[in-house]
Length: 171
Image (tube, rainbow, N blue to C red; front, side):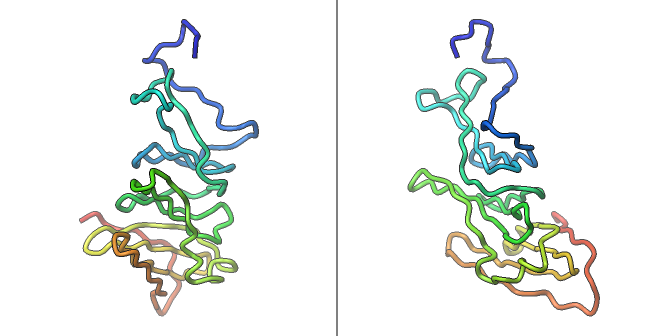
């Protein structure tokens, strides 16, 4: 900006697009990733600057997937349901090709979440990386995840009742 009143210490105000979008979540991963009702954005410095400030910031659309519930960081990936609750998305940054993208991880168990939507996502890092997904009918699914091996495996956790909530302890 050529505005002489704009300082590098000022707050950032940035229009994401020409349509109304509500910010649903922000997560500091490799970049600051912003999930909105109109897509997934990331905050990056402009192409000529290395530091992010109100003068040098650029926010770019990564994917047009609409977000609703919170995103959870697991390793270098973000997991979140789309706005409909029918897809579990993984956002990851690939350093080798300097590109980020969002992939639908529910494609491996399609059409499970189409009629039984996702209502909560939690992640477990230790002892093994796992993504737990709770659905509207009270079913719990587990995505076992080994990104470096490119290994993903889904299973339903069987219970004799309905699961109302799920959480993971950090210990």
